[in-house]
Length: 104
Image (cartoon, rainbow, N blue to C red; front, side, top):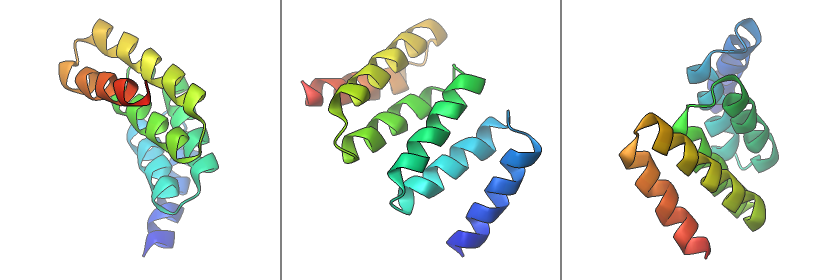
């Protein structure tokens, strides 16, 4: 089932690379499959095409943490905090701040 979902999402992204929902879903599928490098790539692509997609910063940071890339995770969390401050997304901002605090 996961391969079908991933294939569907890949097709959706290929048809419309700026489809934030499909790109987020694809990144999440890669993350859930343990393919952290590809997940990070997709989260970063999403942040590039839609810099205000706040959840991408949180989940990209988490994926970087799982990969042992703590400095990169900190940087992504900090950028996400800046985005959420600008967009007024207090919930995601609090999640990003908590994640950053945990990293120290």
